[in-house]
Length: 196
Image (cartoon, rainbow, N blue to C red; front, top):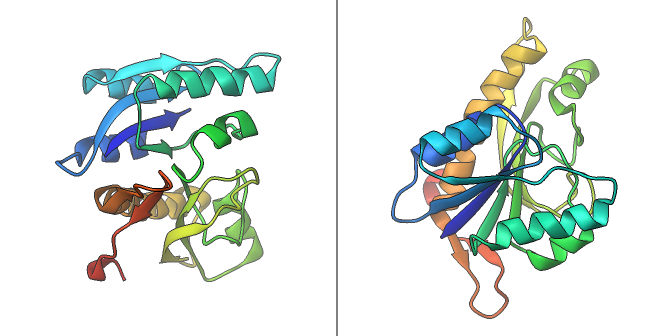
């Protein structure tokens, strides 16, 4: 599977994806909306990078982003800490092939502050979700989830760090099991009994 990763930040999830490449998947390109540490990680790994800065015209930006991704001819696009909502111009081009990680058990606590919101609400369990991306905010079909217990002394940072460990393991496991449907071009994931 050829993979393009979309990034905006430090790139710890990207690093896990890069570190665990094998015969099942390879990262071909990393694309960011802004210069960031994740691009440095990709460059150090010998991966092609590109910045597609958001301009005033969001639809035009989505087209430019889609074209930057298309240069690598990916089977799958991974949104790894990418802090922009993808528009229809991008989603239509990669329908059924864009996945995202989220630091909560969706549909609970969608949006940019999933960890903070879970703590504020007082739940005892949260976790990590990998889902397909659609036009909503964290509303696409769920692919995999894993729970993380909240400890009495957890801060947002300590909880988020434990969730990130689960997130890294989940995304690598899914990328290793990804398959393209020959008829639809969409991504499916082989069942893995160890993941249940």
